[in-house]
Length: 57
View (cartoon, rainbow, N blue to C red):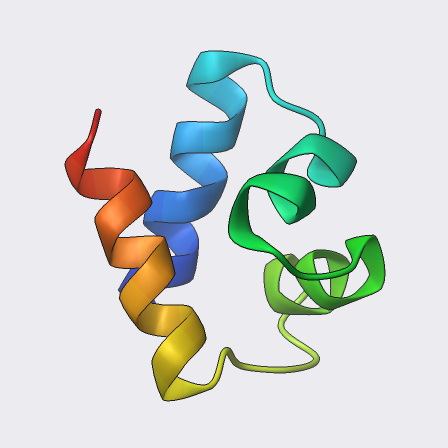
């Protein structure tokens, strides 16, 4: 999923931990970790918040 790939790129460029990213998106660390490891996908509302975060770059 390109959205998750972009999210991981953003996280690495900004030097943000998965824990901090989870706080920024209002989800748990485990949720972010599962997204980034391909074990789960964000729900539509979470996708919306991820897109808004990435648009702020």
